[in-house]
Image 1: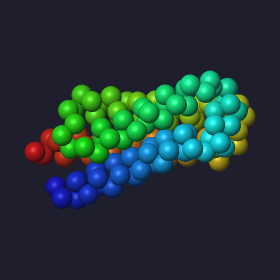
Image 2 (image 1 turned 60 degrees about the horizontal axis):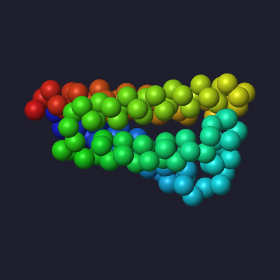
Image 3 (image 1 turned 45 degrees about the horizontal axis):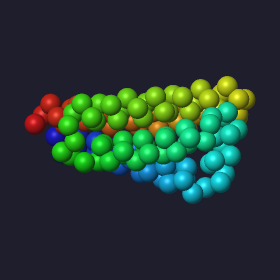
Length: 122
């Protein structure tokens, strides 16, 4: 049981840190703003996505978050990772831009799986 909690918290920490780091970049890094333009997204979407990433990371990290809210955060992050990979592929970006979101999707899957496992053992 202890190993399940460790795997859950490590994978959740990786996802949450990545989401918070990228959200911070959306607000402060001109290169990330240019990346949204490159992908064809409007500027408001960058702000909207940054706020959603912060809220989702908080939802995953706080133990007292209701299960339904966590489910929505997992779903939203999965959608973000799939969409990022598809978006990069659609504009002809190299594979080095397409694969990382899929790697984070796999880590998100580990977090989700072990979240369910830890909740079932309580």
